[in-house]
Length: 263
Ligand code: NAP
Image (cartoon, rainbow, N blue to C red; front, side, top):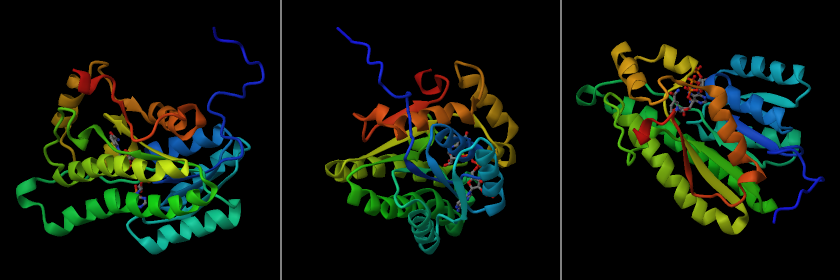
């Protein structure tokens, strides 16, 4: 029988926790930052565009949250090291990392130049590795932490392929596989590593993407819920995986896609 525990704190409470979110200036990263701050976390918003992050920080501060903005291109180790150093200087620790910064430039496989393939891998995959490694080195010291890596249903193995995104699919498959390996190595240190695989989510990135309109139409037709997701719907999953409410989850990938891969 389940007893009522009247002293239980709020669901997904992050009071006292410090979180870093990459690609936090726009889209899902911004929504994640607002959601984590709303749950009580102090949030470090890192993005290639400092201006976008600063406006998100203002929004958090208006809601009486605590946040700072730091310019960071996640493909550059020196900028990642700076985010970690500044986070420790300002807030003293790192409890949560949301690896979210990513790009998805559509480009045909047969004519894709080597440097374009490398750019996507550098940002989407190497950037996640570098940021997770730098943060995990701090989390190990306190023997706790939660890392949430934003993958995609383009990761492979779920029956959905994306023409024009060879480099992107490679990076997202890499994120999912890498997260499982990290989960194994970091479990002894009390650090959990999980992935989210979003389906089609309406963000500024999808509006400026070079995807052909007919591809978007085909995607919407394939989604049982017949609509794209909202950034906030991903942020809810991020909050759960970042909080102690998901304390028995590590090495998992949570699909949030309106039923797309089930179809
Ligand atoms: P978005 O709207 O384009 O926002 C991404 C943010 O990351 C932007 O502020 C962008 O800045 C920034 N960014 C780009 N390159 C960066 C770099 N090198 N270092 C740091 N920040 C960088 O994208 P989104 O749609 O929210 O996507 C967020 C994540 O979800 C990505 O990993 C994406 O692959 C994944 N995802 C998206 C969808 C979807 O349907 N939207 C589905 C599955 C997975 P600029 O705009 O200035 O470049």
